[in-house]
Each structure stands twice: as structure tokens, then as C-alpha cells.
Length: 628
Image 1 (cartoon, helix red, strand yellow):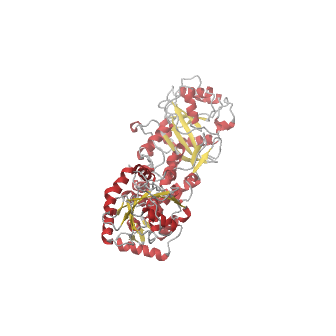
Image 2 (tube, helix red, strand yellow):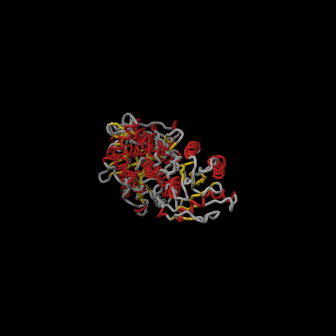
Image 3 (cartoon, one colour):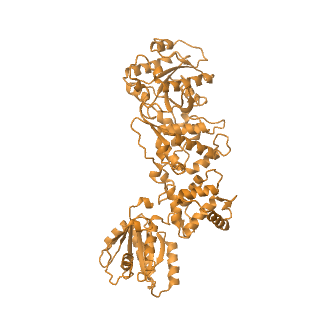
């Protein structure tokens, strides 16, 4: 728990009778050795403004003379840290610590580990200091819960205030999660967290922290730059102790980890904790929920997009990891980026049929931004986690919510528009959807996914925006099914195959159900696919051109996979219609113009979520706190 997470620190003093527990508390409060010592001191509170960590501290005494063992068990459970006081003049005092007090505290604490500080009192009297010191060191090495040991004298006020500082420190800056005294090494979880910190601060991604990056790190964590001499001294210490710690006069990962280990070994583990907490870590070395979750509550019916700040951060992130500057992330470059995360956020095979990639199948900058645009529309919490893991709130010095933008119903400044692609079987829905990103039809049934979804940034004569194409795989059978489709799109694309005489009837039926549903109507665009094949008469009361004329809609667009230019024209038209819906609203549907601006709801109806769910599920970021 970080100091900002605690409202108080509760310190419990235990130990054998006549060890001096009560005298220590009274000496702290009265700043002199008490002439009269009661069996037990009353609980006292030290105000936050007089404690080093600025946290109120409650100090609780225990007396076997006045209290039962059950009461002691309750106090141990309530305490944040326990000081075991022993009399240094008694040779077997530390034996009692290991044979009675430490096992008893462990039983009372259950699964939680209570930090313990060993306090050797009465050092003003003669005692075997060398033997005591060796035994104390053995206990520190053997018992992980024992944070530190300190010797004091209540009579001479020696180290009295210091022991309570160490007790506070054991709670607010515990050693146990960071360091293994037996191995004299950082624990793996601590090393992993510090490696993530290093990568975030390595802004030029060269595997080194140069002087500028070190100063930025110092200001970020400690609010002050390193003085030139201090910087030289740090490098000299690393150079003397780690052969690979300095390279090209810059700090390597090995050197960074060594410095933190050195701080801990010298009793300055609060320095490492300050770094870790600045980068979102809790005492368990997991990223805190509040670090990963934005304070952001969009209204029902709103959609969520990335803000300009969010897009700029993602663009800079891509550029940072595109080390060869070829405009795409190779598998190794992706691996380097996602070293900041518990897992890959996407399935690479399916990703290539959702966003733009290069000829090697590697995601481009446009594809990268499009992926996170789609993900934000679908699940902004998932995007927020990725932004947090890759350093947005730290590097941008802004809350996570600043990377997001709420688009309320009927607002015109949106930049992401959704189009549902509906048509009969074999009308070419998948090919048309994949064509948005220049990909041929590919069956994805063997991937366990139904349908297709693609997203791309397009530009009309007056507007630039993202178009999301989603294949509707389950035709609606009633008004409820129509409503689900209408709620998830800004424009409806109705496809039929000109070479199949039964292809137009299903989309005309869909159109009729939409007319009679009573729902707010979205604009419609009819598209005739496979225009390179022989055209046949449609088995329907009216031919497509007549049908469109009846409802005062533009005639069907003629497209073919063999003519990508015509397809691109239709994609741009779909975006234009989504932006200006009045142009393609059937004349028979008399509804207010405000109801035509946007669909409501998110991308989860009528199978829309299935493809994206699979896309992220196979490599989905799990809760970061479970892996960090």
C-alpha cells in the first residue's frame, strides 16, 4: 500500500515482560525516561505533520498482565506493522523472538504477511553486542517478514524516534516485495516492474538512458534534475560495479537495476518505492486499478473515440518502436512494444484482415491507429489499459480520460462512422468488407469467427473520418432484429449479386421490415456486386433501379472486386452518406432529421462484437494487476 493509500499507520509493540515496551512509548511521547511506568501505555496518535511520511500513526502497547491472548491476536490482525521488543542484556531474548513471537504473529496473521521490526532495548546496559548482532543478522536472513532490526535505549532516548520511523517505513516502503536478502538480488517481480520503468523512460528506444533521459526520469520521480556532479558520481559507481552498466556514456538496463538494488541494500528502499509508485505500482507490485482505469463515464447512447491527445500519443508510440523507419512494425518491433504489456493485444493473423498492413502482413501506422480507433469504439476500457501500460498518464502528464472523447447522440463532430453490410448469401459481403483495406476474400470460418470487420481512414470532399464496415451474418427475422442492426450503424449498405436472380429479394425484404419497424431510420446505399458478370433479371416485383426510384434513392452502385477504383468510390460514398444522412433517407420515411444523424448503442449487436471479441481475446490484455 502506498502512503497515499493509507489514512493511518498502526504500530503494535509486543515482547516479553520487562523488555521495555511501555517505557519506549512513554519516552517517545514525553521526550524523557518515565519515572513511573504503568503496566501498559494508552494508545497514542502521532499527527501526520510530525511524522516523516506525513501519515498519522497510532502506537499500541501490549501487556500480558492486563490483556488476554485473544486480545493480542485481534491487535495483531489490526496492526500494519509489529515491533518485537527484546532485552539485549538477556542472552536468550532473541531465541524467544524466533521460538515464540514470530510463529505466534504468523499464526494470527493468516495468509497476510505482517512486517516485523526487531527492537533491542536497554543498550545503555552492558551486553554482548557482537553476539547479538550476528544472531540478529541470521534472523533477518531467515525470516522474510522481518524488515529490519534496531537497537535503542528508552532510558537515554537513543534511537527511540528512529525505531518508529523504521516501523512506518516497513509499512510504507517494505523491503520484502523488492529484495531477497538470502540471494542478495532483486525479486523477479521487482526487476520486471523496474524493467518496464526503464523502457518507458527510454524515449528514443536505444536500450540506454542518456543524460537527458536520466534527468527527465529524475524530475518525473523526484521533482528535481540530477546535478552534473551527481550524474558523474552515479555513472562512476555503476561503472565500478557492473561491467555492462554503462555504454556510450549512458546507463544500461543492467546499470539501472544495479542502482536500485544498491539503494535497497543501503536501506534506501523508499527511493525505489517512490519510482515504482510514480509508475502506478502498489505494494504487491501490481499496477493499481485507478492507474489502469480512467475517471470517465460516458452517458448511455454515447460512443467513445480517441482524442487528439490520444491519437498523438499512439502515433509517437508507433514511431518510437518503428526502429527501421519503414512505416510498419515488424514482429520484433511489436515484441519490443508489447514488452510493456502482459500480452499481445491482437491476433496477428486476423489483424491483417481488419486493418491496413504492408506486403509482409506487418501493421502500418494507419493500421495501428485504425485498430485502436475500432477498439476504443468497442471497449474504451481495453484501450485505456493499453495507454496506461505504455505510459500515457506518465509521459503525457495527463489523466487517462484526456485520451478519450465522448460523442453524445446527435453530435456532429464525430470521426468514426459505422456501416453494416447486409445481403444475401454469396452476394459478396465478405469481399466487399475486406476490400476496404485492399484485401481479397478470405474465409475465416476455420478461425472460429463468423463475419468480417474492417476499418480505414477515408476522406470525402469535406470531411475525413474512419469508416467501419461490419458484415451482417444473421439476417433479421422480425422488427427486433432490424432494430439491433439499426442501433449499431450510421449507414446501411444493402448488397445484391447482379448475376443471381434471387439476390435482390432479401435486401428488399430487409428494407420493407425497416420501413414498417417504426424505428429511427438510418441512410441506405444499394450496391450491385459482381458487375463484371452477366446481369440477370431479379425475381422481385420491381427491378433494383425501379425500387430505388420509388423511394427516391440513388441508383445502385456497380462494383466488382476486379475494379478496386469503383469499390473505393463506394467506400467514400458510404462515409459521405454517414456524415450527411439526409441524402440517402428514403422519402417515404418521415422522421425528424436529428434522428438520422447517428445510430445509438455500441458495436455489440447482431454479431458485431464477435469478430472484434475474437481479435482481442486470443491475445487480450488480462487484468494487469494479475501479471505485474
